[in-house]
Image (tube, helix red, strand yellow):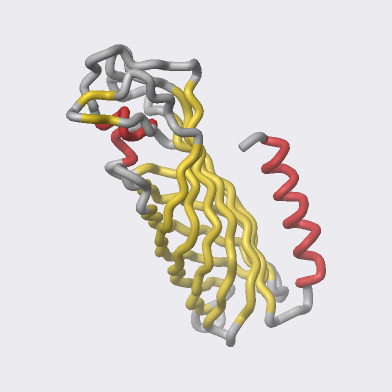
Amino acid sequence: MSKKILITIGLVGLVGMIPLCGQEKLNFNIGGGISTPLNPTGAFTGVSGNFNVGAGYNLNKKNSINGEFMWSGLPADVFNLHPVQAPYGNINLYTLTANWRHHVDSIHGSPFGLYSIVGGGWYYRYSSIDKNYTPPAGTVCAPIYYWWGYGCDAGYVYSQTVAYKGASSAGLNAGVGFSIRISDSGWKFYTEARYHYAFSNRIATTLIPVTFGLRYN
């Protein structure tokens, strides 16, 4: 995703949160941070950034539901030995999820709070290769070719196959967070770590984004 699109989403989110002020039944969050891939995704990608924005409804003082959009980079891991004649490029992950959050906003009357969050939804993995790569005839189907979306038959890569540009799948997520109330307002600074698992074709998408941001209610 281009920086312009991310900036646009961020500005729309900031504008959209203005009407939420004073609305105890509504919630909003926006933030960003660092994403760490786990195996099997970690075998092909390295650490990258993430951006997250969401809004929803408070069922009561301790339970909320919300919808969220997340972007996370999945760059090729330069610290891993790259196979000779293998494709090379970048992958971006986009998600739209519905989530349930159980939260304690004030621990023993303090400004500190804790919450757990769980949900699921749509995960879209978009790949772009730095050149129009065609595997040589007789190339063995190593896992990295599955990752980039090449087709295989009888253990060999289709020489005429062009890697996919995008692949959709369902996914799940779960995590925990910590919040600090800002003054006596409904605004909070939060940080959270969440595990994501998407049932992507052939090789699952697995990562833990650590996010820092602002949350209202």
